[in-house]
Amino acid sequence: MAAETWDRLPADTREAIDAAIRRGVMSGLLAMRACDPPIRLPHAADLLAFRLSAGVTSDPTA
Image (cartoon, rainbow, N blue to C red; front, side):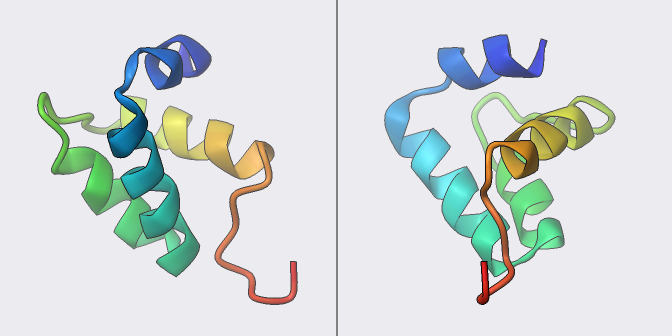
């Protein structure tokens, strides 16, 4: 379901979420909450896990 949600988001929203995740997990969750319509827990946690598994990380050494 997270992949479907991700695919339905506009490109600029996806970019904003990924950029926020690179600043930290909490920033990523807050960016999802700021979407229109907002992505709230627990769905946001699923989407976050999906993006982290895709290689988006806040680790500067990755």
